[in-house]
Image (tube, rainbow, N blue to C red; front, side):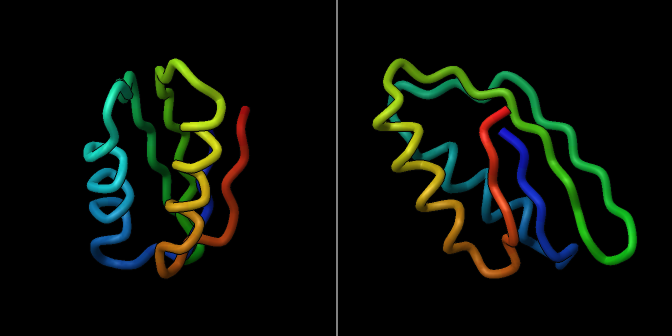
Length: 72
């Protein structure tokens, strides 16, 4: 998935904390880049159910500073 948001101290930690609490989910890779006060992150996640993925995306969207999340 791709995550775009305000480049603020601790936001990446907040996102990875939410992801790490999920059961039956494996974070395979994370790549974060920052430019002009925004960050863009690509996360590769292995999950066995699209319903769980949709629920995860909803939880990540409410993190303060997150502007956009897309499945890629």
